[in-house]
Image 1 (cartoon, helix red, strand yellow):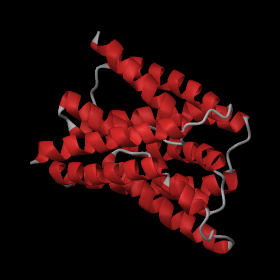
Image 2: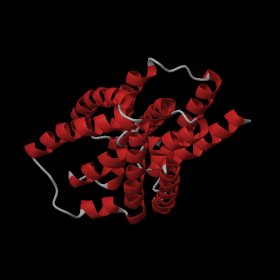
Image 3: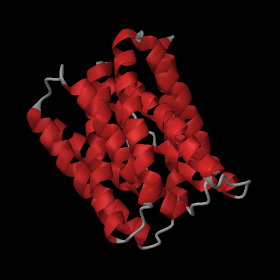
Image 4: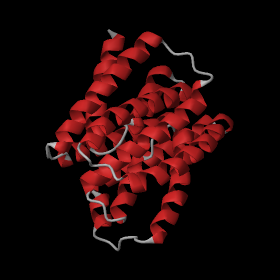
Length: 249
């Protein structure tokens, strides 16, 4: 029953996050940490689910020609390099410090979701020309490092950046999902060497993540308005961040 419950939670989380260009690790890390009390395990399985969710959604987005490969490929190369460095930092940094950083990140992401900050960014001055690729490489390294260190795919940062580059929200979300696939995979490989999970549970949540992302990506392409769901999940992230900080006191 526990495995079924995990699978259902992962299915609905991956459905939602795939709709807004994220892999879902911002939710999976604290969720599995509460269940297992093992931060490294939580990071590793979150990165695996991030990879599966993003891969599943990318299948749809590539078929629908929503991914901008000219931006995505250099971003992927930089972020995969940064993820290796971030994974190393996880092994030497105090767990309480990483949890505090993650809680703060959840507050920031929650605010972005609730108040739609990315929509504000879209109307500001956009970055164009050769400067764009300089920022892609620099930001890719930083996003990759954060991904490897905290177990997230970085989509919550990538989507706003792509909108500053002039992308519409759906094109930004689709391209972000493709980038997150490789960033998460790189960070997962760096963590997986010392991982010994329950394979029955892993197979169940992988399948749930893949199917959930298929549903979410098709709903997003079909012009379902995810704004309300986005705001609701922002509130959930705030609640989870408060719970995490309370546990550190």
